[in-house]
Amino acid sequence: MPIDWSATFDQALPYGAFLDRYADTARRPRWDDSHRRVRLVPEQRTLLAGFTRRMPVLCLAGAWCGDCINQCPILDHFAAACPAIDLRFLDRDAREDVREALSINGGHRVPVVVFLSEDFQEVARFGDRTLAAYRKLAADRLGPSYPTGLVAPDDEPLGRVVAEWLDQFERVHLILRLSARLRQKHND
Image (cartoon, rainbow, N blue to C red):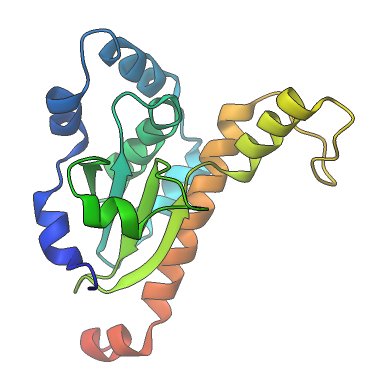
C-alpha cells in the first residue's frame, strides 16, 4: 500500500523537537557540535532564498546514527535559510511501513530524505550519504589506490557534503518550479 505522505509528514517533528525526543544526553552534544560546524556560504544562502515553491521535506533519521549527526544539521540550516522548505524528521523505527518503503539496497539506512510537493506528491528521494561521503569512505576502507572519481577530493569534506545536499534541494525546487501542474495552479 502506498505511503500517505501528508499524514506521515504530520506525524514527523521539526529538527529541535526530534532531537529533544530522540537524542540521548550522550549524543545530543554531537548533534549540537555538528550543527555549529555547518556554514552556508553567501551564494548558497542566496540560492536558498530564491526558492519560491513550498517544499515539504521528510527526513527519515535516527538520533543514534553518525551519518545523521553529520548530515541532518545541514538540512536544518537549509530550512532556516529558506522559508519555502518545511523540514520534518521521522525516527527510522517509528513507522515500519515508511522504513521499509525507504530501504536502500535492502537495508534500513538513514538519513533518507523524501522531497514532496506542496500537495504531498512525492517528487524525489535522496540518501543515505552523498557522493563525497562515499568517496571518502571508499578511500578509507578500500585504500588510497581505489579510484573515487575524476576529481581529487578537496580538503573540506563538510563543504562538499553541504554542496551535494544543496544540489538535491535545488534540483527538486526546479522540478517543482517547472512543473506544468503547479505552474497552472499558481498561474506562473
